[in-house]
Image (cartoon, rainbow, N blue to C red):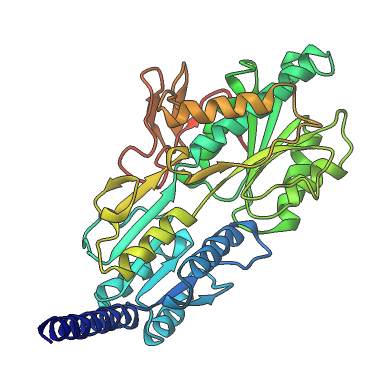
Length: 397
């Protein structure tokens, strides 16, 4: 009887403990933190820039499922974001991603007003400026790395054209359609050009600014002008396919090749598109969402270069990615060269902004810099800071 009694008590205890454990598991699952995530987009999925952020949003939705509710606002013009941010706060957003440089000032103001909501602003550099706010963050991929590799691919095509006597060395002219004369754009086209020059030292480049991020007609028009001026490679820091279509359609003295940004241009320029690069926003956005879900500090949750409340990374953390190489058109060996350079960036073996060049600040001609000792981009900020136009070799029209 005693043995039966002990077995009965043991069984009862086992059942009680199992039930208690199941209760704890159920309780933990039911009490998991669920959050609302807001996105403020300057465009929509018809533009590659916004499309890349939407890819990150979709990845977060897939990864976290019902734990995350997302609210996206598209085609928000810079200067009209106050009402959108107010709506997102009132909708209960725990974290809001603002995705255009021009949103930075207002986003920080709203972060100061609502300290319990996390605000993450891409491409901006004001997180570490006063007032410093624990709930306001900036981030960006080190896109100069991708720009440089894109320039190398362009340089290899130029060299092939020279070697085949399609053009002469003094015809190695590159055109660039830029949005605004911001440091982000200047840094990008300088890195691209230095990549070109690492292969073809005689190359020169002409830049035209559209003063808008997304005008198909204007971007195509300026690319056409550059082609008519004798450029044989066209690249861009603008949001439409206009420059790529110009390369495909405009018949100049020679075939003109295109290097893209944010998206592959192979569908609109199948006979002229070489390659391109993009920022991959998913690693940051996913980590920031995970931090808020876990009630942890965002910066401590990142694998990145951290400066205060600002974070950036390059190929080393997949924050920057190359687009496919069009091997039907690119110079032989381009794909292998691209892969090798990606590895070199991961090992921190390349200093892009270095050489026998002098840069001049376009807004202050007295501000001059020599690149003989090198300039380290993104050293203290995820947003690009190099804002000098290289004298005699880059021409701004």
